[in-house]
Length: 170
Image (cartoon, rainbow, N blue to C red; front, side, top):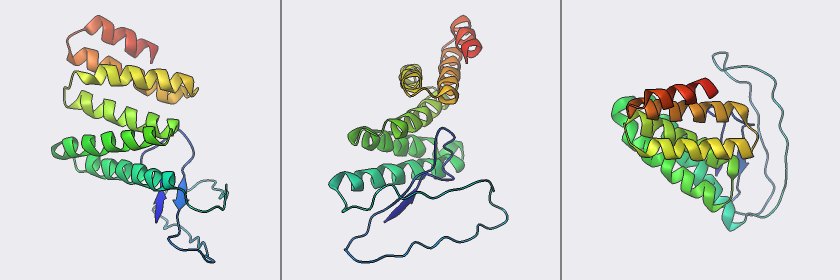
């Protein structure tokens, strides 16, 4: 199974590619030139570990797959927002299960945006949780986005002064 964090709308860290072979043996990794329509830039490939698969690896793949499904649903427009939210919530649970804090942050931000878009009151709590995690991980861009989400949630709730404070801090 192969899963990639690239092109999934994540601007808060390196893209990750995970490959899990179902059976032992020798494998070849093939890299191809991207189509000219794709975003170009400096890329590098690092093999962190060659090791037997662990049970947690499957959960990591499930998390990345759920996240990708959420991104795809979000691209389908407002009518798919509930399905996108469900996918991001599933990804969030799996990222937490394997203690992937960066994945958790990415999912929290997406959940917060969609909750805010859908007018759900949980958006503020989700945004605050994402802001705390972004601060712990020292991700200023993610923290700014979380503060903006909180501001939007307060704006929708009618707390314009509170929304202004969050937007100014973002």
